[in-house]
Amino acid sequence: MRLPTGENRVTQQRDHATPLGDAVPWRRNCPWRLLRFCYSIPMPTILRVGPYRFFFYANDRTEPIHVHIEREAYKAKFWVAPVRLAVNRGFRPAEIRSVQRIIREHERLIVEKWHEYFDA
Image 1 (tube, rainbow, N blue to C red):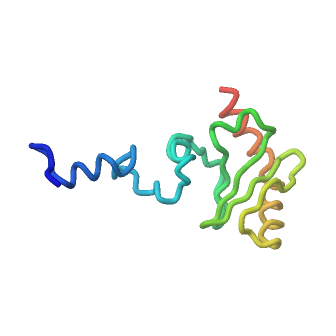
Image 2 (image 1 turned 90 degrees about the vertical axis):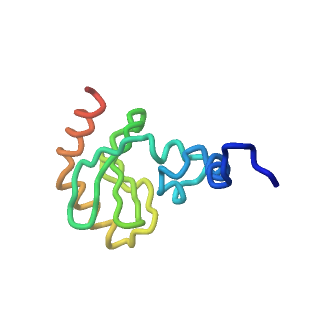
């Protein structure tokens, strides 16, 4: 197959690979239908305790106060008032209890950060 003048095979393949090109290396970890959300939604980190990162998504304002937790590939979501598990993706029960205890200890901080971010 002959390519049009002035173009090379690499450019032509790159243009058709993905709408984001090669600039986004983590796109492989994101389902295609959700791709735009995987790089466009900020995730403010509220707290780090040990291996856990506590954060929320910037588009969470329509839900009751909650916090997302991640450690490596594991993720969980907790409602804050009262503290209870909403979603668990990979954490063992002992870790869930530990994370729940951390959330109770920092509940005031989580609520303050939530209002600071969403009410601004």
